[in-house]
Image (tube, rainbow, N blue to C red; front, side):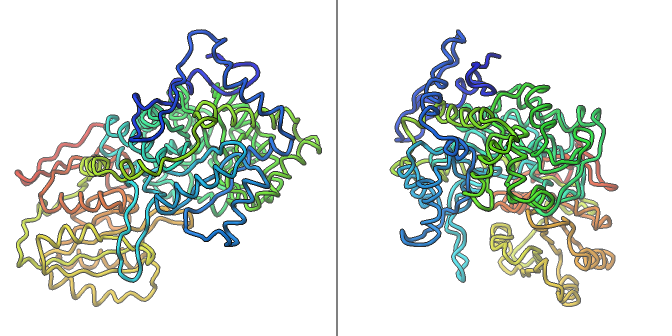
Length: 617
């Protein structure tokens, strides 16, 4: 691969081929067509982005170049023009001259309108990144109107990565990438901080869990590469994360510093396998891990702050030439030991190009500049990072077309065909791990006594809405109960009495990974209650919409279905499998110790009671 000497590290040949698409190759409704930047036959043709980047760099002070590296987090909430929050966000662009934005949550129209407003304010086009791990709907949804509980809709929500691991189909994974790119670009987002390429080989991992494709590094690599192609062949930059691997840890890096204490040989055969595949697939960006790997850096520094990891391993040994992005710089995995300012300087010295979500944006920019004057790194290091960012903007054609087209947004975002593709993926992912009582699919009538119990955080307003609605159409008399997972005073005797009077009790668990949890386990009292009603001979079906490893806590449950996440499509698919409307064909991409192994999964069809066809791992 060729890298222009004036733009070290930016693999222009790859990105020029995939990052910028025309209306013909990736139609975006009525949006303004984007120019094609084809992969050239001669290295000399690669100079255009560098010429543009260099011409801009000559006009920029050191602080302006440092500002290109700092990307604040913003919300797509409605705020009036004189609101303090809007004045602060706009000052990031007009006064601080940041190079990009990290877009958080909000409704699609407000997101696009706010990004367009910020783009108009900025002298240079802004690069916009977002976590779209489960599609654009992970960030761009209107939420729920309280107290009525009205779903305000939004972009398409796809199942979790582990659901795609259960379906084990690269065509489905590619399609998710394609749709996410179309919807994300329509909203004004250019870089997706996905796919998660962490190999989830630790069932106690509180933050990765179903965000990973599974525990087999080669399957993670294969599915991740398909997703990368789906994104980048449709105009959006993919980001492989969290390098060099966040899967084998029991510590949440949002809350503390994880340590992955394994050998370099183990890293080479497990954690690094998907990242090598991503680099081979031409991934445009890599996000770093706020965790320590002593085999790579004996100082104990987290990967984001380690030159051994960022420059030595990723740049030099693996030959990655794209954009290196930090994980959020306000996370305790880097701030607890080093403090916010020192963490910024160490990340830049290590070789990170983009610093996302610092707690104090102007202070972060100042820290980058101060690192030069303190001799921590050279001005050239800052210029190289700024050049990569600017060249990426040119490759995405943002120097000519930086705005979202509001007129065409509704024709793309949340389109019914996209929603159908999410439903298809969910249908293929539902995994029946156990059917010991041979009751699936259920034969229900209007007179059936069905009890549906949901356990979820009180803030999960959509938990079981679609699931219960689908079941309720078959059993109008179905009783429903909601158990708050954070409630220490649940009346379990009452729930037990209700289960005693039901023909079948369906327990839906939404307990799972989150940025602010230290454990993915369900409350012990809840798990014990399930054990008691099973021991009493009640027919119980447990559906894991959250942590799929829940079966380890309730090993005696006879019926266990994994739906992988609580997305509306997954809820509907689970209900349809249980009632025999659609078949179940998913297989575990993980091991659930000590009760189930990777590849397990029962094929349950509407026409035949059950046939066991475990997939060979």
